[in-house]
Amino acid sequence: MTCLDLSCQPLDEQAIKSADLIAFYVPMHTATRLAAQLLPAVQKINPRAHLCCYGLYAPVNESFLRRLGAQTILGGEFEEGLVATLKQLQDRDITSEAQPLPAISLARQNFLPPERQALPPLSRYAQFVCGDGQTRIVGYTEASRGCKHRCRHCPVVPVYNGHFRIVQPEIVLEDIRRQVAMGAAHITFGDPDFFNGIRHATRIVTAMHAEHPAITYDVTIKVEHLLKHAEFLPALRETGCAFVTSAVESLDDEVLGKLDKGHTRDDLVRVLELFREAGLTLSPTFVAFTPWTTLESYCDFLTGLQQLDLVDHVAPIQLGIRLLIPAGSRLLELPEIAGTVGPFDETALVHPWRNHDPRVDELCERGQNAVHAGAKQKASRREIFQRVAKLAYAAAGLEPPDRLESADRLDRAAIPYLTEPWYC
Image 1 (tube, one colour):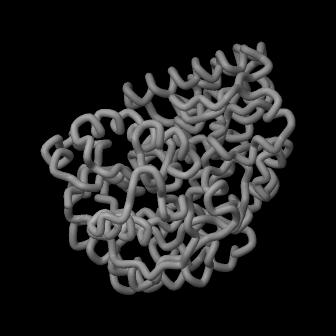
Image 2 (image 1 turned 30 degrees about the vertical axis):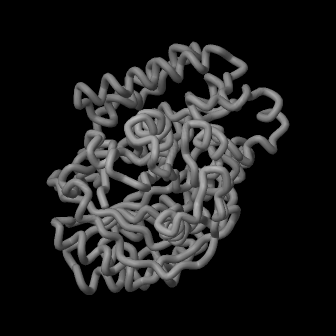
């Protein structure tokens, strides 16, 4: 078996030529676009191989991926399907015309520890920057998949539709153990929401901390869950949680309602208070540009980040994130979305949309350019924020607040983060 990470490795044509089964893992938007580019080339190199796409984005883009040559599509809990596909190929009991396996499976599985030795070394991936500015090698694992919630914009929903599945604790801990042996000093949990199974989650981090007390970690948790399970926040700090990512998405209650996020701006304020009391760091993420964004509301968003002392906590890329409407999105339930988006763009893998005010789309593009330029110049988060804010206030014809030009109140290195920002 050959395993390639095509985000950081070249295509191995010899391995492609000799393969009977070639499977592309497409867990997110960017990976799916990469697979779409490579499928025709791989099919040309080895026309006899059976091609499979598996992962979250495979079933929702099934027709497109099949036209590119994929013969088996697997989403949700895909491992048993992958094994079954290989066995059917070995038994010559599979054809390209009919897929005997369901495209989406939510079956409960007994997992095996992942084999990661064939992948590039962990040092090739994102690094964790500690509060003292030093870096650590990062490992990755999942304690659960899917989500109990059905946020309208979330790509998990079309596949899991409110369900979630746990990975057995002993499997998660063995996966962590192996990655620590490979050099990992920090673990990032890839669960869509770590607190979907609160007892399961706390059991794992407690056991991990007991075995590896020097290891730090980060998790992703909804604002709603952070409030509901606030009594567990000290346990996160005590077991080595360096920061919590939370998909806040907006500071506008109307937009939060449209997205069906399950929290309000006041809820976020309360979470920030709880985090400061618990000594935890929150790393909020946002969808800054939506069909409902105006120049004034975007300026309000930037002002809100300042008022909540979140400027240094927010990765600059979050200031320019534009709402993605993938295939099967619950956003299409909203009349104002269904009636204004364009036909599904299979190249971009989204339903395209434009803001009713073209100045907002122009600001989004200019802001993204400012973020990318600032990143190349290694500017601080606060410096990049100031550049974007100046563009926004100028576009809206507003005077920037006095605090915009204030000096840093907090050393950026005091806030831990990953060198590869989290976004979908």
